[in-house]
Image 1: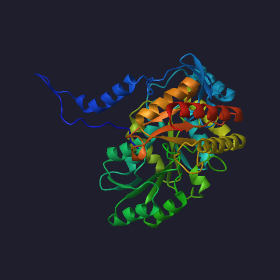
Image 2: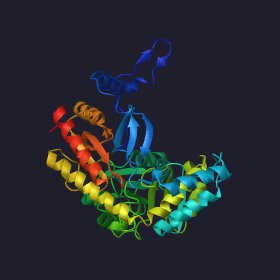
Image 3: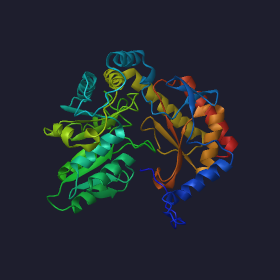
Image 4: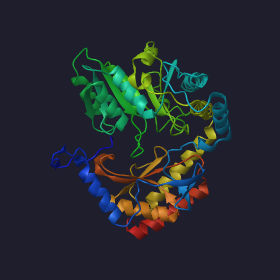
Length: 416
């Protein structure tokens, strides 16, 4: 869900200067101050002084296991990926200094889109400067005033922002509730443009959408379907194409959104599609037209990484093994998790409240383990979570070490 802040009860009026526009953030400022006053390190300002590998970094001068980076397939230190970026940097320089529709399309951008088309078996691929911009751009461009967007209430901030920017009618439904989604669709006026937006894996709890059933219902009700596969690309599905592949609905989905900042191991976003009119998006999509394109070194690393992910079956198998072990081990220790069974590379550990969550986060960091502390309103049902994101490069020994760290920290803080 979208990151946000609580609204202050009353605006602060400054003598002779009008309203202080920052006063709306007072509740969040107070929350952060109270958290730091309790003696924990700021969980939202961690600095990695040196990154040693996809699974380790130096934080506060200490060798730390990384369990919160979304580096699912461990591609950030792949020698071939790094070398392709170095070569592109030498051949094409540091940046394009322009938009894709002007001077910002280099050979590397076309090769990156070629790699995406091959990876997904799709006719069209469009690369954006970030994954956020991909959702913002695609949704706001195809769903405008008078159209309807039916979306899961737990959708990512970029999805909500894309809906708002396009000025479409927003129709949310209860998380992963097939019946609720169908009811919303049937209430939309006949003849109106309809877009159903779903995510393959939801990033907070790591749970998977029932895409097979949802896509079928969307199509029966005349809606186009967009699926965000940010947290499943590279990992889920026989070829790593995501939940759409695993559910057998790739041919029924109109648009797939993804990011390079997770399994691909760099930065950027994309959309792939078989829609015959898709290429017009390059002229109509404002977040694509009015921003500088990705640097040549970035698209070179992305293209190399994507092609390597096509043959990464062993990495996928190791990641699933680690996910099952971590999930089961944490359950055995007595922690409450976001899902009953492992569904993805995300294992969410539910905390009693923000204070306990921050204390647990700090205790784990002292043990030499970094995880994500996620808090309301970004989390569903006002939960505080310690979000663990596994990597294909985590060894079985590291997973056992992680479980030991959770046990000691959990007992010290009083969680278990």
